[in-house]
Length: 384
Image (tube, rainbow, N blue to C red; front, side):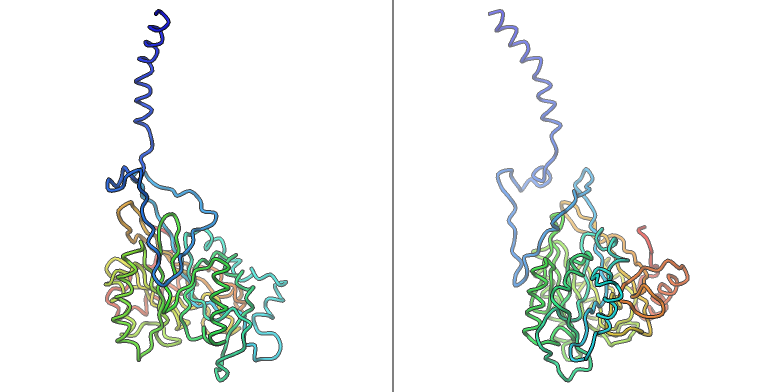
């Protein structure tokens, strides 16, 4: 009996400690959202007519505050063209540069790789093909292709997604485009075009990417189609990014059709609009609290070894993620040259360090903002 009483007293003394341990348990998602129960798991809605997307293979722990909130950083670059025209004799401009670099395919992203690998998603416009198929557009002045193994430039460089809707994706016909898509998928790179929504998942956030070309004849059609697509995507995904191949080549500011479509896309619920095709940088608008980047210019362009304007920028935006919402936060630009050299284009995008050159990019964007009602008046170079 004495032993029993001693055991009972020990249990009574331990009880408060046991209760305290239970009170200090971590709060789970089920505590945040009472509609979920510990015996249930949220359903994963499949991406309609698109890729399932993939998580970052070696994803670092998410830095969350006590409410469960965290930030997501997305980087966007402009037109990316690698390889060359297989109809021409001898090595292409790209192949000649590759030989100068000792055959190291990673030379292209050497000066931006750290930036692209430290974000949560990088997307560029891939303007070309990864294929061995014969040339289809034989009458075109320019056609572009690269061997499929060149996909490592994207994968190793920190580029997780590409827009694949532009005037060069059909340079090698349907078979070339099909091989390009298969090559990207095999490398784990998400692609999107007018018929396929790309989906990328990172840190439990689902990012949908929609991509279109805007021709004069398609203006009215896209003003109806794109908002419908955006609304449908937004029902199933946390963030919706829309890329447009639009405008006129060499233009430094958007035309009225671009402005109307960009704003209609935001009105429908898109979180970010990215533009390309002009090969020149265009101003940025902040409309309804979200950004329209009318043209990112070139990212890496192997079509010309001495383009008249080699200035560009990387665009980065932060999203604040909470258990209940996704909100656009700050943006910044990284003024750059599409080459590491000033005397010719070596296809290696390189951030400027000379303040004069940085100011030139910022001032150019500001000077071309006339007529844009919602143009940003400040281009931050670092996070506020």
